[in-house]
Length: 313
Image (cartoon, rainbow, N blue to C red; front, side, top):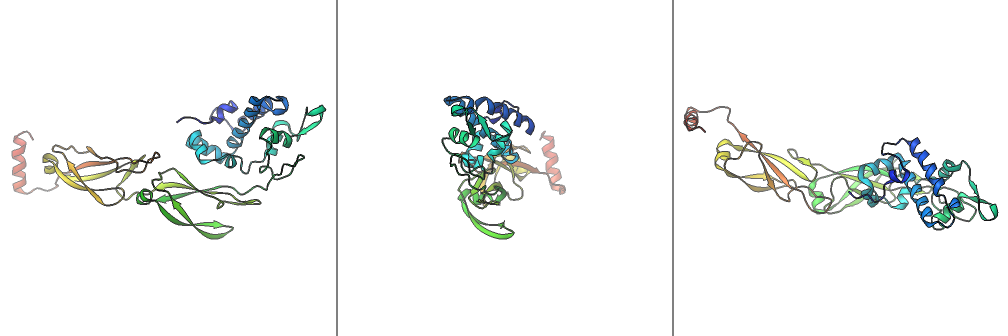
């Protein structure tokens, strides 16, 4: 998986770094690339924004968990810049850097507020993150509520065709029913975002994310987008070959040719009969052949098998 942004590399820490190590590394990098110390340096300005973004993710345990789970590229498909900085108080960053709200070194040696610096570094926009107003008129909005992640179990049939699901959530202690569109071909591990249905905050509600998992019929086993199911055949059919009906993961059955001389445990593939893949295709279904050996034999059957044994079969 190609990495879009490696937050650990940006801060110069290992993936197993502690919160304190991350905070310490951030202080160092933020001071190094701070706009107040790098006047007119566009490269330093960009790096300053990147280390702030890295710290906003890695200092939040839930965002860090999802970044580590999905990797950078997939994380940035799921999270916008607004999502990354949501509920993040930049005043904490300022305190982490210097312990107070101003730096010296502006025009004529005047005090320059962090709000002004941040507004310059982020293109004249610093709103939406701190819950207060600042000197230059940048308006901070009230923080909205936390995002909520819930698991949504779907049958393969629901993912193949797409559907709508009516789910119940709690809103302010009261049940709320919402209809969710399930995109066709969605795979296990993907998320569906439902805007404005998360936790409540002073500035409104966060978002609800539905983490998709697949529930398979009994007998099926999943390995990524592939599935496996057992099929029992008679000893004679395994020797001579046959055709059998096997269930498919979306329901129904298909005919499968079992070749002569099939071995117990041998897997036969049904191409494209598995689960949806992230690329929009489908995995395969594997049918594991299990040979039935009769527990009791009639006298005639014993005689026939004895004859076969004499033929080294």
